[in-house]
Length: 145
Image 1 (cartoon, helix red, strand yellow):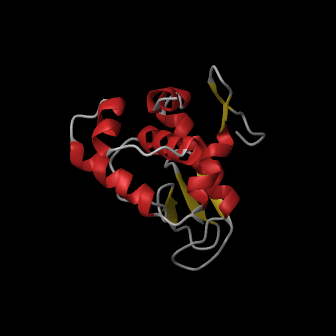
Image 2: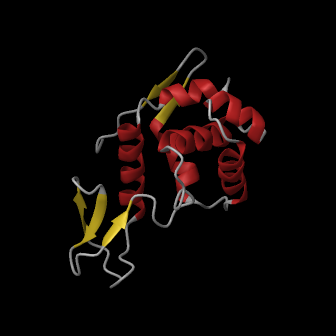
């Protein structure tokens, strides 16, 4: 199975953002400013807002995706592919399959994914949102999606 098939299983950026939001909510978001664990989801800002001090936390904050300008679709599909198929893929091959113009950001993304700890929840939770059978990969609608 090719990465391009995983890439197609994540339909758009808003779906990827929603998956990441669900994963972050399941993990629990902790306010960096006051340490509170209760947050609101600010749909217009696409971030979590602390109920106590109103400090905002982005979806990417505290994940391996933080500080990356690459689309969430690249990240989620690559993480799912590496985590589920467990095949090695080179940065050059990844760049070609994703259709990205520049090698360096793809290389850095792949390096971060490979070097992240095996206990990283993001790596393991993304695979909960797709289902694989012999002919297709399907997006799984969770009850909170």
